[in-house]
Image (cartoon, rainbow, N blue to C red; front, side):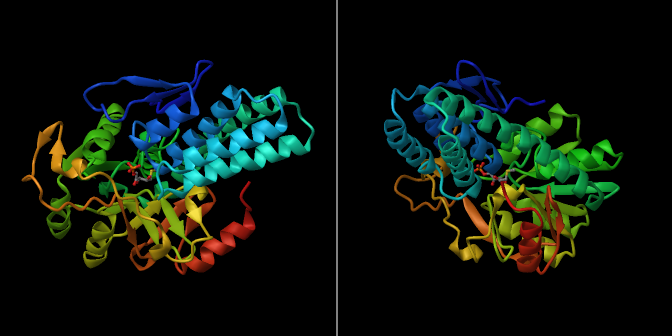
Length: 351
Ligand code: MRU
C-alpha cells in the first residue's frame, strides 16, 4: 500500500507529496508544530489525510507536552488544537479530526485517567482513526464500484486517492474496487492547475497500481466529453454542506457543469467525516486562498509577467444539482441530498 502517512515510535512519517512523482522521499514530524507545517505546505494533503494528520498532531502534542497536571495539559491542548486548526480552512475533516481528539481527551479525563494514560489513550485514538479511514475507503469502494462503467473511461479531478487518505482512496478507491471486480477502466486525470495533483499524484498512484491512465490539461475535458470519450466522472470532496453542495479542488465545478451538459454522470466519493451538516449551504464553506507564487511560478521558473494580478482559490463549490450521487461508507446518497444526508446521519450517528 502507498505509505501516505504513518505513526511511528519516532513521530509521524509522511510521504512528501510536494516532491512526487520524481522523488519518493519522507518527512518525519516529531512535534505538533512540524505536523501543522507539513499540512500547510501540503507535504500531506487531501481532506481525509489531513484530518488524520491533525489527530496525530494532537496526539504528538499531548505526548510531548511537559505538563505535569491536568490543568497544565488542558492549556497545552488548547494551544495544540488552535495551531492545527489554523493550517487549512476548507476541508472539514481537519476540524473533525481535532474535535474527535478533544472528545476522547475529555472522556479520558472523565474516566479519571492519569497523564500517562491520557497520552497513550490519545495515541490509540489517532491510530484508530487511521485504521477507520482505510476501512471507510474500502467500504466506499464496495458501495460505489457498480456505478463505474463495465468498460470505459472515467475522468477525475485533483487527487482523491491513497495519497489523499490513509490508504486506498475515496474517488480512486471506487475506481480501484471496480477494477478489482473486473471492470475495464481507463482513467483520465485532469492535471489540476496550479498544484498539479492530477498530473503528479493521481497519475503516479494509478500507474503504481497498473491502472491505465492518461493526463489531460484542465481545459481539454470539454472536448473529450463532446467526443464521447468519457463515460463517468468521479471526484473527492473537502466539505459537503447539509444541502449536498460540494467543496472540492478548484476546477471541479466546471467539470460538473460540463458533465451535466454532456449527459455524463458526476459522482462524489467522500467519507462521512467530510460531511458538515452544521453548514447549511455550499456558499457558507470557507474557501482557502493560497499564495500567488503557486500560479506565477512552476518549479522555480516564473511563468507570468511581474506585477500581474493573480487569483488562487484552492477550492470551488459544486451545487448539488450537478451531482448524480454521493458515495460514502454508509451507502450511496441520491437527491434530494438535504433529505438523504439527514436520513443517513440519523441512521448512523457520528462517533
Ligand atoms: O489542496 P488539496 O490537494 O488538499 O485538495 C484535495 C482535494 O481537493 C481532494 O479532491 C479532496 O480533499 C478529497 S481527497 C479524498
